[in-house]
Amino acid sequence: MLRHEFQPGKLLGGAVLTLVGVLYAGDAGGAWETPWFVAIPLVAGGLCLAGAVAFVTGRVHRRREAGRTATDEPGPDLTF
Image 1 (cartoon, rainbow, N blue to C red):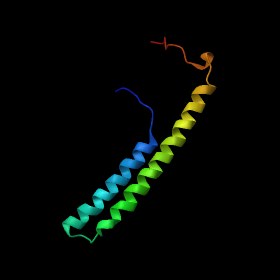
Image 2 (cartoon, rainbow, N blue to C red; image 1 turned 180 degrees about the vertical axis):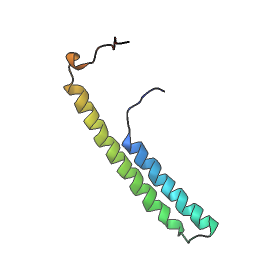
Image 3 (cartoon, one colour; image 1 turned 120 degrees about the vertical axis):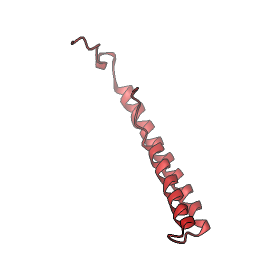
Image 4 (cartoon, one colour; image 1 turned 135 degrees about the vertical axis):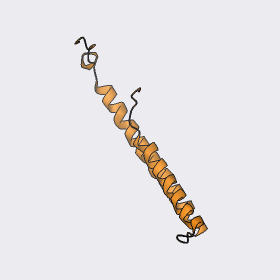
């Protein structure tokens, strides 16, 4: 499997949207009552928070990459 960088903003956004889905699924199943207007602040706030986290993560990633030099890169692994 190819490795990729961890993106906490997308994780947070997905978690918030999953939470809203669970809230309305519970409402549809009769487990509890969820007012229709609950989703608006949850989704808007969650997406704003996810955007802020993604912004900070991007800045940290760029700062780390800028601090690296050519000698910091690991060489090929030649062990067998």
